[in-house]
Length: 465
Image (cartoon, rainbow, N blue to C red; front, side, top):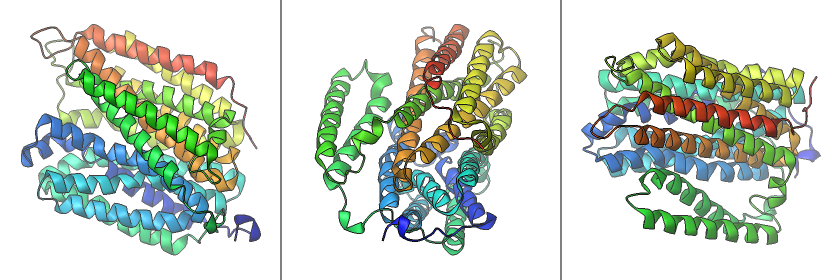
């Protein structure tokens, strides 16, 4: 049976609220490792290299699982795949909570990484059960709540780990994921499969896509250490090129490909991916640089802030990021995607440029980071919403997955660029980067973001009501 053979069942606010609750819970579970990495390194006796591996393994899994989950949701139904995916995530959270050592914790993180695939599956359900205008707002709400959950996890992980234990910082959001999944299962009706289940799974395309994404994330993780291991990085780049070439060749010949290369050629898709990548590079550089600037000793040019103080200073940005999703959804509905994206780019470029010129007071950084978080949420949510509503319902999952994977890659590239700039700007024998390194970083991020306006101008205005 296909999705066109039966009218969709409309859902109310309770069902959308269940999806939003799941987004908050998964966002919180995704974010607990980063702020507590030093604590985990001490308790599990990890080396810096092992700590770095722990910090990226969830991203690697997320980049791998997201497009697969999106395509399977398109084919077999969003709810059917979502419930099974959340069972894997819940198992991963419990493994992480009970982990006695690093190998077990890594296994838990690998399983948890599947949670990123929940977003495209949620978008499939939203499009299947809501009218077009309402679905745009709902996509924004779910996206914003995922970001808000991530910020909540970042702020609460440290106090929970220190006040209770590292086990509870995984256990509490996992319990929330299990509860939210139960709500979604009870309140959200099944959506019919978008394609015939007899089409089968494109296993060669899946294997090659997996290899491409894993190799790409490894290249990004190792790029800052190119001086110490150039041969390994060079081999990975060659392997990456081989995976990409083979994947394109296979997908062009497959009757039912995992990702149709013709979809990537559509202006609505490639423009969204390019814009998302560039905007997230600029955002990620600021996300990396601002906390580092807060932590610079006050006897230099910084503020000497500790982890708790930095979390407090970043709280307004967390609130802005959470609100940006629904605001963007409503903006796309009323004004069209191009207007929302252009406004977000202007706000972000202006905020980054202002930070380069003025960063001598705490409020400079707080306001700047808040505007950047708001602008990023406006742009990325508008891109996801525009992409979701520009393709057939049967392609919603895979199309939005491509944008979300591009977001992950953009954040990884931006963080690596920010780290490279500070490393290059640190004088020999000092642990404090030169102030000019931060200025260069903010200017670079602002210039990259501003250039994305050239792509934004080519966007269609998008549907508006």
